[in-house]
Length: 125
Image (cartoon, rainbow, N blue to C red; front, side):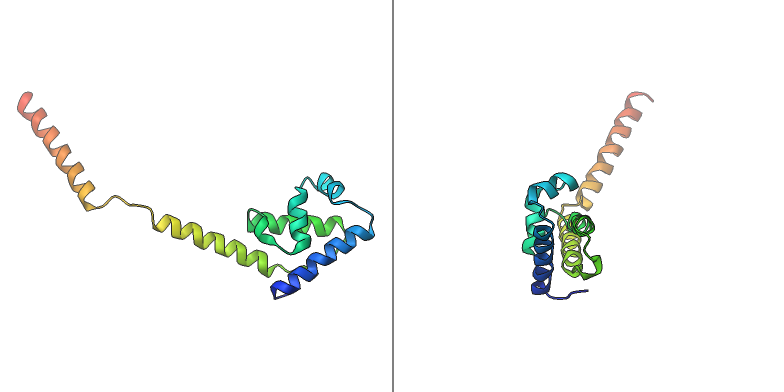
């Protein structure tokens, strides 16, 4: 497994050179794999930030490597995994920053329930 971002860019160059060796255009590969050519170009450029999700990037890389008959173990997965982890952390932080009803809301809800029951009891006793 490759480790650095520069090594992933080298892996991306392997995709581009293999595709050109096979005489395939990016558009033909995109049509065959049903993956946007912009995403395939991002893989070839080693720029995973242009792919919407780390999970998608991993699947796209795997599909593209299989299509080009490249050894998938030669492709750097660490950058994809880091991107996926970063997305999970970001999602968790955004959930943590959401406003959660506090004690005041719980207390006022309880008070309203008690008042409604008291009024009901006074009217129908």
